[in-house]
Image (cartoon, rainbow, N blue to C red; front, side, top):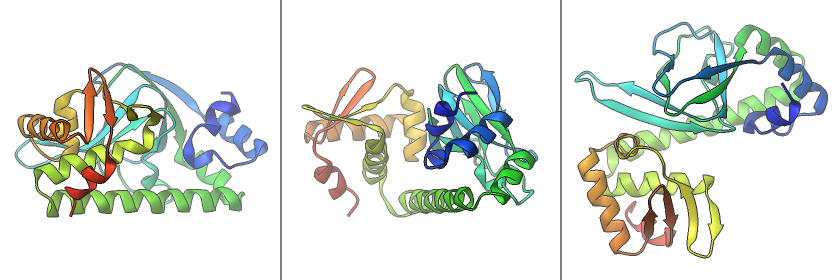
Length: 224
């Protein structure tokens, strides 16, 4: 695998070429069709994954069978890093939401490189710290906010992946509305109504598979 592709992975982006080359040498690329499971919750945590192309949803299923999406991983995102050095099983499920190409790094191989590279160890620690903050925010969002607040927070969370345009921050909104609703921790009907409210107030604009964040300050008021 080319090292330029490895550098696109956030957790590896600051590493030197020699380390990137070592990582590239242990990557296995696997194609996954849409709706194919990458792994199930409770399976032995044998590898860390990253998205080369496509997208993957990380989710848990509650006691009454409802899906709660924790995150949507896209190109450049790593996931399942929590199993490194722990020997633990995967804490959630992962499923391809589009035809995807996924990079697979066996924990045993990756841990060997990390042990020999202090910069990489620091990068992994920082990455896992940010991921922990994200999960903490997700728990707060689900437990303390109403449906409007949860939907507004989900939209704000997408802003970091967007790009600035004259019409606002444009983000990919191609994921099914049911998946967006699950990401926000609400039903599809409630999420649709909330998005309609956000459009009417002028904070967002939706055009097919694109969402434009026009006024992030208005969105943040729903979090208060």
